[in-house]
Amino acid sequence: MQKLTFLSAILLSLTIFSCSGPLDAGNVNLENWKSDRYGCKGLRMQELEAFQAVKNTFLGADNQALIKTFGRPDRVELVDKSQSFFFYFIEPSGNCEGVEKEKEPLRVLFRMNAISKVSEVNVTTLNP
Picture 1: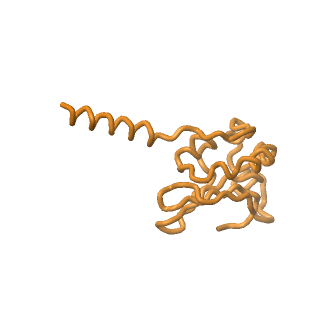
Picture 2 (picture 1 turned 30 degrees about the vertical axis):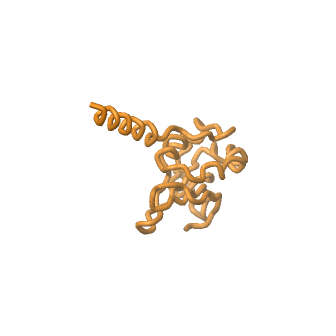
Picture 3 (picture 1 turned 135 degrees about the vertical axis):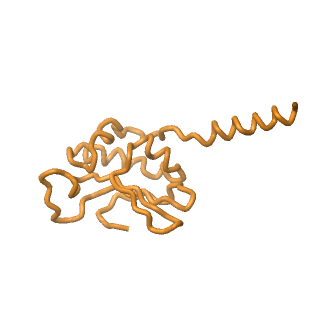
């Protein structure tokens, strides 16, 4: 009976600690962020300064916490088995209606390591 109780306690603690909740995004208006897919409305650009202030707090966060905080990424790129990237466009991307791609749009790039934890956060126009 003690083994069953101990095992149940372990399983319960793993369940509690493995579920990620939203992250603290400081003064970033997450409703604006989530509603501005591909940066088409320009709402994410309004949040850029607030995001820059807290971007390094996301280091070590897992991919599910990012999704719960910022919504589904605009683009996900798998580089190899050891890293992937989440992109959130700040400036309108080529996916926006009426936008012609003259240059690469500004974006937030989250680099994820092999265990889906954020290892780098950049605001850039460069592709990885």
